[in-house]
Length: 431
Image 1 (cartoon, rainbow, N blue to C red):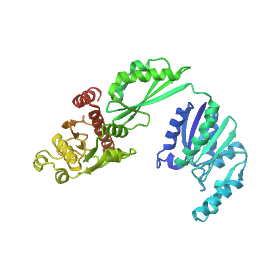
Image 2: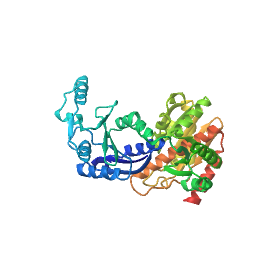
Image 3: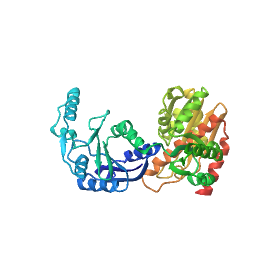
């Protein structure tokens, strides 16, 4: 089963909106054994959409479009599909009635333009939208099927999961492909690929590396008559070669893993943040039930706040400034003492775009205070992504990952000193 994606909207084409729908659809279809062969973005132009749909169905079995099903004049996807099918638009009485009922229930006056959402290409099938107003459409065209979904993400996902995916899976038949995504932190993509060269050579197995700041997801794909068995063997070998570098699978974030480990140990953590400005706390509170393990945090961004709120000695700050390993250690101990937690986690450093206290951009120190004492990790100088405004966001994100990974390793009883030294060696070797 070969499918192409067509996302519609000037806002996507011009970069005003990130195309998250295409990313989600690609992952979801792959998980269900449907091959996505191409993804295209077009603007709100009727003839361009018609041509793109025809072109997609000249190569694939089906095309899935998102966007252009709303009530405004620039929502022309339904018009384009009608033109591609050589039919007109007709008013669907059931859809019109539903529009009126939803408007009345919310106490709104229904504008005449809203009835555009009740117009569908003649002969089209309606895809029930249990999350919103505009239905999806199924249109039989020369060459294959066009599925048109709303651009609103939660509506698109609802129709996709409830209607489209079951249909596509039935057409595609039993999958001959099995996939699993393993998650790693703090190790460079090139280092992972080097270590996993023998897995790449396994019959019927393919690896894909999906890097994020300080993290790399490894998607393992196995194909063939015994795809699940091949996948299990490949995953086992990846884990053997990488060891504790693998921290989770699929959607299991580093913060969720840390939360689970803290629960298992009846332990708690508090965060003292400088350059990350609360991002570590945001990660730790994203996990359901996080109040069981996360006590709170202190964002001591200004230098004097590190002394006033966390008890960092004034003399230490005066001598070395805010970016120093001893400052990170004092911050970790201070937040642990003030909030009464098992662990105190701290970060201080230079997110840029300018140096601070004589330290270059990308210098980061991470402190961890716990029952075993207080330690500081000097993160390898984080790579500076150019000179634009993205510098700060990337370095902050990398710092969050490094800090959570330090806590994970401590909770597992792994050698933190070796972790820091390995980071330095990898940085020197691979750049």
